[in-house]
Image 1 (cartoon, one colour):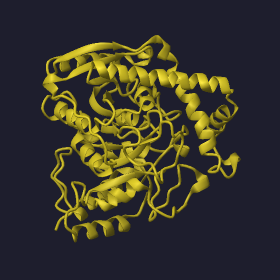
Image 2: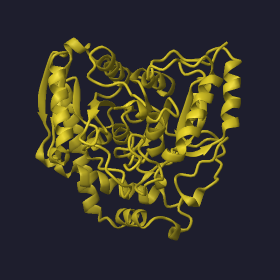
Image 3: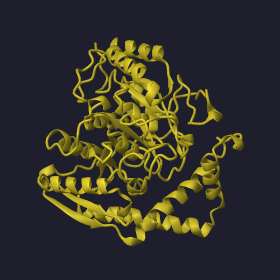
Image 4: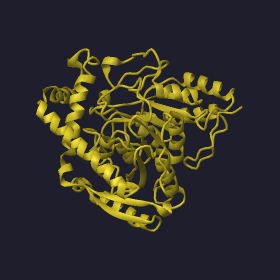
Length: 431
């Protein structure tokens, strides 16, 4: 009986048991988290008790015995869920979220709760980017991205409504999966805007994302992508391309040229100018839905940030005609993505506008993530280089609905076989 996994990771010696894996995580947290602040709740004895139980059982899945961090808007019955708000500090849900239940059923160890922005919206956390603590790790899944990037946990769950999985993954230099909309269950997760809300994952190697999807995905159709040698990739050329930094734009073009040598075809896919309105439309619908979804969570309105107050007010006060126009833009975006996937197998774009911004006034610009969030199709984030500040840069591959496993397999191939994506070194291993 063993709690170990055989998944690829950062190249360090694999743990010999679940207890060994958890102890390594706890040692790393003791060493580093006073700088990184990735955890909203951590009970070492609870984590070790789970690990000892896993080591005494037969192996249930590829994740058996593996420690997993869980974003603090995802309910856990044995650990508090505070939603990133002082209003809910110490709150104990009655039951686990369904994704947590499935992780436990698969034999995973719920190591602790990772930090989130306030109600998974905008107010930043105390979490720092492990590659340079003067920079944001992104958000709203700040703690999940930072903890995985810093080697404090091998896997973590986050959520994405706009760009809260793919963007912090890019800022922190780890692999991410935003699954097909509804593929991973959302029961027991704080709703912000259910038109977009999706549970996603962070890992140090894409094969771990495949294992996570294998445990969490509902049964259903699976779409298979062609092998790399037969793949057609469409490079998105959107109206918001000028929001990318020069370093990010250059990295994208370098990646495109590298892909030309390993896939059958790489073509440009212009995004229509009418979709320049997507950023504003997505933000408005998110505000409208959040103003309803969070109303009963905000017990004392004076104890939330001014930024959240304004955001929710914008949603409540939005004219009906403006909301309808925004939903028309969302439909146009979904139609564009569907049409594009009839011409190419996978779409390629940046995972963020550039390196993680300096300071903590915001968690960064999610514009490059909103197309996949709106269309409800899977996006895989891959670290592919560094920028002028030597902080991570990344791309995202966007596949058709339910191509998640195939898309992650492609990411694995681009990492292990072709070296287009880069394995995740720990911050101290970088030059």
